[in-house]
Length: 302
Image (cartoon, rainbow, N blue to C red):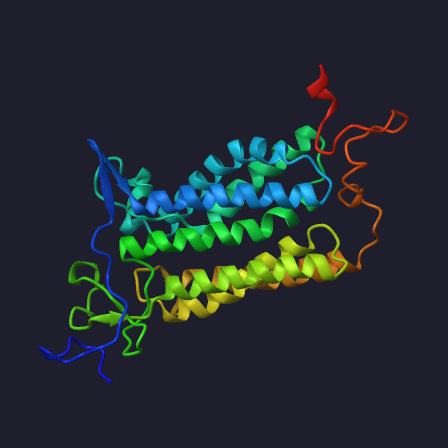
């Protein structure tokens, strides 16, 4: 079936485009894109707190890390977007900051948040590997919710399709050369489903297999990157290209390979590292009495 605009009265099954990209609360306009990120971040914090508690750690440390990691992740995500797609920056003077219009690169976001998180955890004397494993499924949930924001912005869709779940894209959001097409692959929806499935798998694996610290996070990097290779093969929005392929295809391929190597080496190494100290022993200096809750450093008692 031709996915071009159908003749009048010809029925088609499809996913409708959103009626609006936000709503007003008094004089303030709330963008659904930003709202979805707020909801996603909130869910990630709550899920990570529950998982840290399950490891025997102090869930309060999650909020402390999030205060630093979330802004760093947003900044990192925007920097990655601005560097890799400079032609897509809005032309207003504040365009390089306009995250509410879309434009957060997941790779930059994860890197920025991870650097801030590692810095904060090491200052508190908390094993980073166990925390990374706790946060991995939560990151995927946050990413899945964030993809709903892409729906409201009518972005991150794929090539034209006549499938029943094809997404209607308004004419002003169709890329050059695709004005005559009406329905497109909802690649953001594919990623949403995959993110939730991978999150569930990581939680299951963590409960049913002996995975060394950093192992689940390495699988998060591997699994998500592998899916992005597929997703990039469908997308038609603007991207820098290299050797005929989208830039993110190369980034995802490199990260998938790195994630596989990281996981294999991590699981085969000797276990005597600080990140493998049980949570109820972490942060307790040798020779001092036990009993301090995990995730609390001496500096908190000064």
